[in-house]
Amino acid sequence: MLESVKRHDLREDANFFDTFVEQARGRTPSQLVATAVGAAISATFFFQHSSVWLGSAFVAMSGYGAWGLADRLVLQRQNAAQEGDVVARMLATARGIAGLTTVIAVFTSAATFMGAALGGWIH
Image 1 (tube, rainbow, N blue to C red):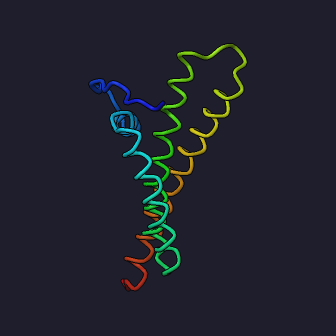
Image 2 (image 1 turned 90 degrees about the vertical axis):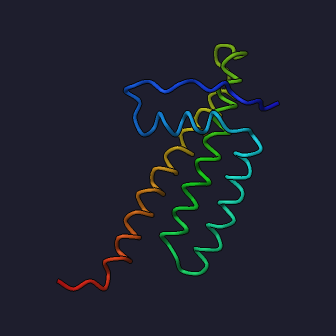
């Protein structure tokens, strides 16, 4: 059902997000599932042990895997989609939510890491 999407060379003006899109589209579905599930399990472990910045980093990795799977399904659905396809819209919404969750988790991880790293710093 889920097949690999052909990889393309990045444009010269590619940005940070273009790079991650290309990377996710170059992974197999099993790699994306392993990333999403494994990182979610790791995030749970780190949140239980009071490491917010590591937990957030693993949430971001899990979101990357979920986004990649949703993106693959959206692309496949678009090829066979008809006007007003509810499933295609739901998949696109899920892809957007996964992407937003990933970006928020990255910023949360960076902010909490800096807070932990500089928390005891006196100037």
